Length: 385
Image (cartoon, rainbow, N blue to C red; front, side):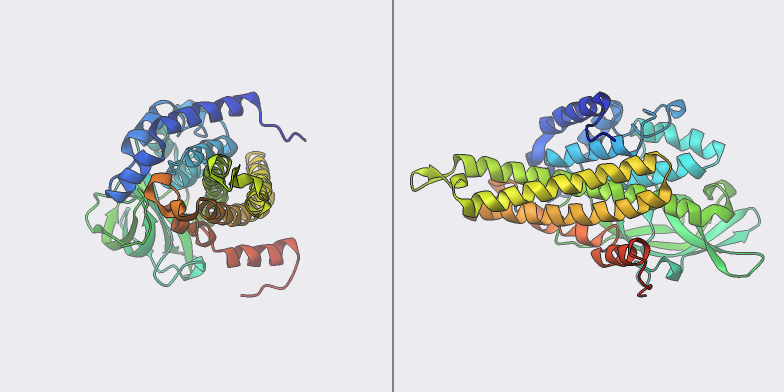
C-alpha cells in the first residue's frame, strides 16, 4: 500500500494548478457575480485534455481513472476556480456512457467529453423525490420505436451551458408492470424540454435549474445502454459523483486554509504575526489535520473504484464526501475568522465561499443519508427509513 501518488498524477496536478492560477479566483468571482460562466477556463482545460483524463483512450481520452479526474477537480478548486459541472459532466455522465452506453453512444459522446467540447448535465432530483429515488415520477412510455418522456426535475446544475441532460426516469417492466429506472440522453433543444433558473443565494458560476418535460419525444437511441440495466447504470454514476464531490470540497478547503495561513503570517498585531498566537494557530492546525484525513479517504475511495470494487468504493466514497464537506466548512469559517473583518471583504476572496461550502453537506447526498448508509452497511444496524 502506498500513500504517495504516482509521478504522473503529481505532474497532472502541477499542470492543472498552473492553468487554474492563470485565471484565479478574481476571474471566477467576476464571472459568478456577473451571471457569466467559466467558459474560457473550461474550454482551455478541455483542449489540454484535463477534462477527459478518465475517458478511455480509444475515444481520445487519457485512459486514467476517477482518481486522476478527482485530482484535476481538486486543483481547480484549490486555485479558487471551482467548476461544479466537472462533478457532473465528465464524472457522472461520461462514466455512465463509457460503462453502459451503446457503441453508437460511446462513439458520439465520449470523444467530445474527452476534449471538453460537450457539457452534459444530470437530472435526478424531483420536487417530491430527493434522497428517495424510488419516488421518481418522471416516466418514459414507448410510442412505436420512440420514447415519450414526461416529468419534472429540480436543482439541475448547468443546464444553460449543457448540450444535453442525462435524465433519470422510469419505464414500465413488461413482466411485472412495475416501474424501473432508466436513463435517457435528452438534448436541451428537444421540443417539450424547458428549463427555468432557480434563484439562489449563492455566488456561483454554475446556476441551478428546474426542468419541465412535457411529451418530450426521443428516438430509441436516447435510451442509455439496456432498458434492463437502469439501476446498475444509475449506481455507476453515484460513486464517481461522491468522489468528485469530496475532491471539490477538499480543494476549496485547501484554498481557504492557504488564505488563512498566509494572512496569519503577515498580519501583525501587538508586534507579532497573529499566527504566533495559539488562538489563531491551533484552529488552523486542526483544519490541516482534518483536511489531510479527508483527502486520504477521497484517494482511498478513488483507488477502490478504479480497482473495480464498487461496494467498497461506495462505503469509502460516502465517508470521503462526509469528511471533506465538514473539513471545507471548518476551513472557510476559520479562514474568515482569521482575517477578521477582511474575511468578508471581496478583496480577500473568502466571503463568497461561506454559502458555497455548505452545499457539500447537502449535495450530492445529504450528511444524514451518509450517516444512514454507514450505520446500515458499515455497522450492520437496522435500516432507519
